Length: 330
Image (cartoon, rainbow, N blue to C red; front, top):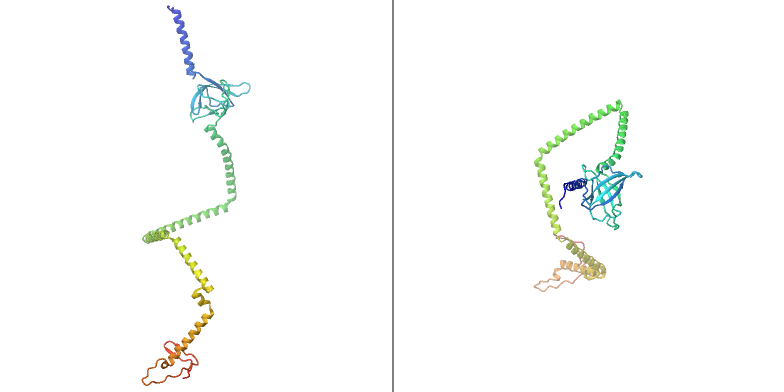
């Protein structure tokens, strides 16, 4: 079948019109060959949001804003979203207007509610909210700061007014005098500082020696501390405690009269016997000193011994010399 020129011209015109429509839609962000889902969101204010703005889910671009219209009944703005994704969007998902940067325009981010399993149908409304961008947040922070700054300026003005009222001619003169005295004090302090620097410079060697000695003392103290740490002080304390317990036990035995020393200390009869024995020994030694021939008899002619007579009173020796304190009857 041979096509006539009119048919060819009609086909060409129709193809051109279809290509023009597809290109126009593509430039507007809508591909006629793609399958889209349409949702609507209602906002009170969409300042900075324009058609063809990106729509994202977790940062991924899934669609665009296709239309922004004004509701004649409520005065609110209706934003039409065109999404090319099969991701399930629940009825309670929110569409948030935000600004990703300083230069970029505002976009819409869909926050899906994964806990809600009721999926929104094509053409339904989503919950719309807005986030403050950095400029708007800064403005909200600056508003209270501005009021506080105005209050501070008013207080400063009142303070300056009060100072001017207080500082009359006499007050100003006193203030000048105080400042002059403060200047003199600072000058004297500077001189004293210079003198101290001179003294430190002149005695630099001695100060260095003192510091060296302090370092040595610190080193020795550190060594002593290490030695004490290495020593088994716990064992020494335990042994000392055991020794003290033994001493306490021994003292208790002495007080109770146990053992030889206990009996010697606490037995009065034993003490009296020892005292009596000591007395008799002293008398024997005294008699031996006064009558040695009675005990040691060296005689060639058989001389008779004198009979023993007990001394009337004892004699006392002080040092090497004899001090007689009694008379002995022979």
